[in-house]
Image (cartoon, rainbow, N blue to C red; front, side, top):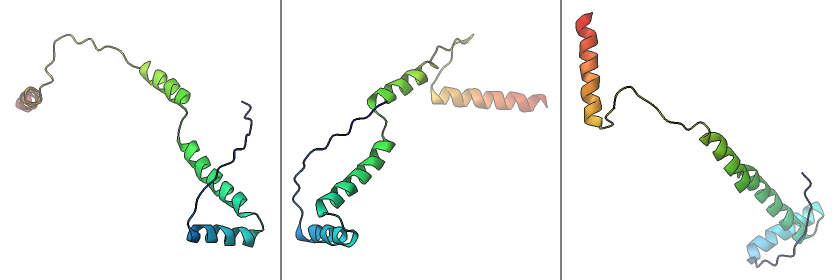
Length: 100
């Protein structure tokens, strides 16, 4: 897949403390402060984008997952009531231990 790179101008207002920190770091490495700020933002959002799937990728993954959906055909009806399940478990446990 071919990605085209576009640049956009973004004007930010920073407090003195943040601007000074960016300016000093930029001077130390020999780049303009705006380039350093842009690079820092690109790195930060690059990491975030790697963690997030695109909407199309999410749909594809969901469709793959949903292919596993189906119906369950039991020979007898079941009761999903917790109390009924507990009674069935006790009955089954008791009958297994009476035989042995």
